[in-house]
Image (cartoon, rainbow, N blue to C red):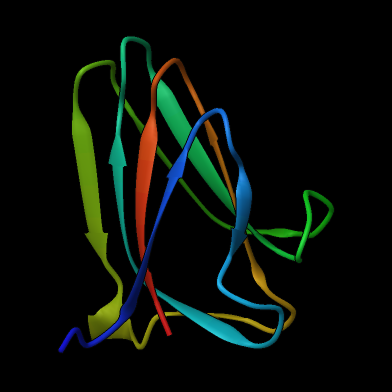
Length: 95
C-alpha cells in the first residue's frame, strides 16, 4: 500500500490534485518534455490561488523533490497543479 496518494498532471491538462480541502504536498517529479518546463502549485481548486511552490527543469531533463523531510507543504484550500512546457508531465505525491 502506498504511503501517499499520487496524481499525474500533463501540460495540456492543468488540474486540481485530489479533492477540495486541506492537503499537504509531499513530493513532486517534473519531467521536462521537448522544451524547458515548469510547474506551479496554487492554493486553490482552480487557477486563481496563491503560488505556494514552483519548480523548473530543462528540456529532456527531470527534477524530483522530496518534501517529506520537512513535513510537506500545507495547502489550506486545495492543490491546483499548473505545468507549462511542451510535453511536460508532473507526478505528485500528496496527502
